[in-house]
Image (cartoon, rainbow, N blue to C red; front, side, top):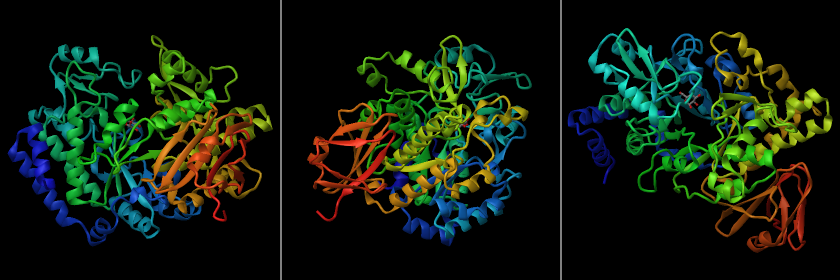
Length: 606
Ligand code: GLC
């Protein structure tokens, strides 16, 4: 079946609307004919680029990092120095004025936020980055638009057709019914999932805030309109598009309105459409939901959805392992799901969002823990309420009834640097640096490609200054979205500083990763039970060759037995590529110092 036949099948199943389908095909044809020479070349030569072990990402806010798009072009040396080959630029399309959820309330998908520059500045930046082999991903806020977006404005102006682009009701009967089963995303900011608009006397579905209106994807013209925007953005020359908040894209009364089946059909269509029009473009899915739901957004071998997914589960498991000194959750989860050969993870330890503590409850129960109490432990450990914790994170969206909460904070503050500096205890500072370095090493090892959160490479700490900004003060996530400290970043070349220790470690790992085919996105991976709760063993394999990595998640020296490693390694002497350690697997154990990690391959000389 060719792409268009498949699209037709899915479209008719959801929408039963031939006229709208033909309009969609016309739209695709027109963007296809507009694809420039450069981009056609990319389409020909750059399929599946995201599997490369040379892909190392960084995510950043253009304004906080460089000021604007023109100035970002001048920072390419910085990316080259560290070895960054992929940039996720945080929302840069024109947002509404005032509070805008960090750019996730878009007023105009065809224009750049004027504070950052113009479309021309952006395409110029893309060209500059392309010359340096740096790929670019941008956000596409697909679930909702700002209430200042033209569709919402027309709806507010009593345009019935446009009101159908959203989910709105005359009375509170349906909203109340929805609210019985739909959990609140941000109970502080948007209690009850709906906002009443007196000017049209309607209750509007607003999952995230009163100013972000959820789109009605049951309407084919919403699908068509959002496809049109997507292809417009693709034709600017980006390599990846991040589809924001996909689990929310379909609403049905009496359900949780999360992860509903038709969303998978929508994503299959988006994938088929971009394969038809701009095949070098990759789709990145953002679905911060239960692990078993996240993997579904890859689709399957024959019907792909998003090629790349945020590995939210790994992030949670990493923090869990640091707090509990127990890696079993990472081990179980690494072996739990088969992802399609065409899919890969984007691995990260921090991003612009809070950490929601969704983990594999079954596994936690199998360790003899109560999932609710364990979650409470993590909330307190990272929310600065657990005596003895190294962490200085902050609680977010605390619910006094359930005591549920999420966590904010930068990587360095969460992993102990801020407290260590305050306590003036050098050994604690040393420990926290080792934790940060280990976390970075793990996201560089795990199947997929790593995404460094800008500022983490120089161990940025929490920043409270957002509380003085009226457009930010209501939103605790700004604590880990500081302005990039260029002055402090100079220390990255100054031996003996924290910045040096974190940056240079990362740089070295990136450099090694790029030469290691074992870390290619499709190389086989599994986690090994090493009979030591604090040490994670990850195996990567190509054909008959094996690579292993060990990570000690505790502040104590650990010993791991070599018997399992010996069996699967085709040699006796293993060489650690990071520090040059040599291990003889005929020895009974390997010793790892506090928070030590190693990357081992077979010694060529045996
Ligand atoms: C995504 C973004 C988050 C935003 C939300 C609503 O989860 O990462 O920052 O608040 O979508 O657009």
